[in-house]
Length: 209
Ligand code: B1M
Image 1 (cartoon, rainbow, N blue to C red):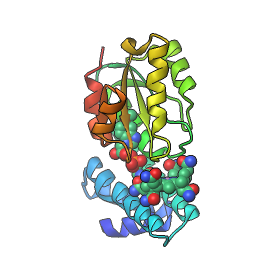
Image 2 (image 1 turned 90 degrees about the vertical axis):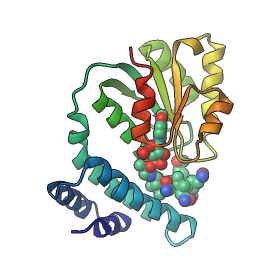
Image 3 (image 1 turned 120 degrees about the horizontal axis):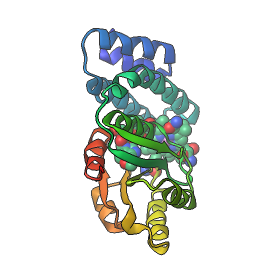
Image 4 (image 1 turned 60 degrees about the horizontal axis):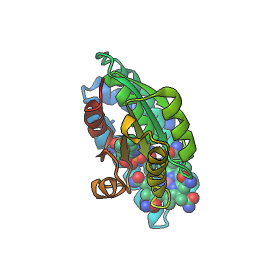
């Protein structure tokens, strides 16, 4: 099976075919990062384009997401087997009003593989819930993910709440997700920004204990 054929399976939402294709790619010696970026993420970008152009709708986007997740599931043990030294604890989540979790999950798995204890709050996480987690879990850093331009404002609310509660100096805040940029991160006073999961691992590493 060729890379383009697997991309088509993801776009069509064929989860079993995607999983099988990813296994084939691994057996052929393709690197995990190349499978993620070159095939899985690339397929989801096509899905996003088609949605924007009105060629497909939410249900098709949803089944494509399921297929992508089936592919990532095959790769997960390989990402996690890195077994590096313990780096500390991080809390991650997708911000309020936002249900996109694939990128956030990928960031979480890669951080775990790098040696972080990852507390994942899930999706649609209210600012108050991030605050509670900072108080209870005392992480070195929190990672906020947003995929919608309408939800990224919640990142600023989280930073404001931390400030208000006198906790801002105790925790680093990293932001990411498709509509988020370095400029936006600086504007809202976040400590870091990462455009992808691999970069997130490097940025979080600065905050290791
Ligand atoms: Co939605 N969606 N979606 N969607 N969706 C986008 C994001 C969109 C760009 C599609 C488009 O129009 N082209 C668009 C947003 C436009 C905008 O606001 N700028 C959009 C829209 C409009 C919507 C709805 C509003 C549609 C509707 O209902 N009319 C709706 C909103 C629901 C909600 O959240 N309240 C909606 C719903 C959905 C589904 C549920 C159907 C599904 C999500 C399923 C799921 O996640 N479980 C879905 C999908 C699949 C997409 C696209 C096609 C793919 C997203 C994805 O998983 N990409 C997406 C188009 C696109 O991105 N090209 C789209 C793969 C993933 C690995 O990449 O998440 O970007 P990504 O993560 C990357 C980086 O961004 C970064 O690292 C990751 C890995 O490298 N990153 C971080 C992410 N978080 C990070 C955190 C960090 C650091 C890096 O530090 C903490």
